[in-house]
Length: 262
Image (cartoon, rainbow, N blue to C red; front, side):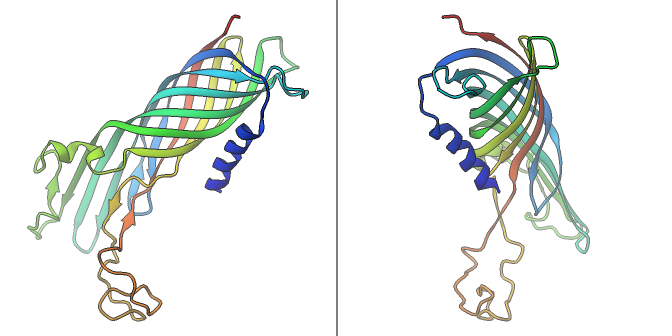
């Protein structure tokens, strides 16, 4: 489903070939919930943030009755993404908790459909849009703390703000800077003011983690913890790994746009 959304967005943009022009520009400020979808961690959202500008490109000479409704939107945003996380190991009486607060430069390329609402006075529009985003991490903070009473090992008791150095607190020292996602949104426009509700869904797993099954003896493997469950013994402890989840955000935005005069 994820790949289908990205392919659909690209297909809409690539299949349209016609004379066109930039017709309007604007700015948008958005806030909402941001979290990391992760099967390994219990998570809760942080406050997400988007601030950026955009320009719309319309197919004015396209010989189609919907030519004035379809547009492309190119933008540049500064965005905040992250999550709070928590893990509990009941048998060990161990607790791990922390957060990621990451800032990215984001470039969205969106295909949209804008429609004037006939039942309302002039200047009322609704629009739908979909498209990929390309994100580069700028800076961020990581807090990662684990406490395990009765186990003095450093791997079971640490705090990046106490036992770690500055690099331990810089989130992009531990996770990928590059993220690719898709935006799916709905907008209402009243004259020059815009109001948006959209989903920002990331695809790139953020961080590599140790696999909790690493070293487990597989009954169908080689018997030394290096089997893959099929009896072939092709998976080793060096290449077994797990990955944390992806950036997710649900955002509400308000903006203002103006036509480009020619």
